[in-house]
Amino acid sequence: MADDPVICTCLDLTRSDIIAGIKEHGCKTVEDVGDAIEAGAVCGSCIDDIQEILDELNG
Ligand code: FES
Image 1: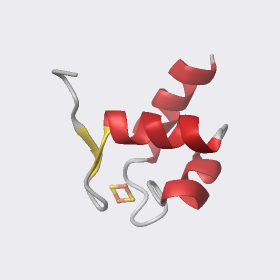
Image 2: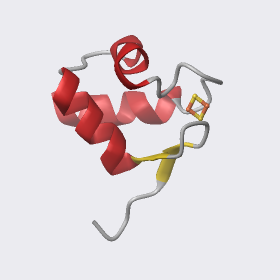
Image 3: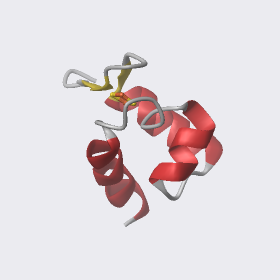
């Protein structure tokens, strides 16, 4: 993917990393993502971006 920005700077996770984690663990909420891959569970500043990704994937 050409456009794959880092979403979670704490963990250096890009958008595609987070999408892969969401799919692998079947995450439905930001809390699920934090439990599964820790994205959003360190400083929390990427939570809004993670929520957007979840909205896109889960409709
Ligand atoms: S940027 Fe994701 S938890 Fe800090």
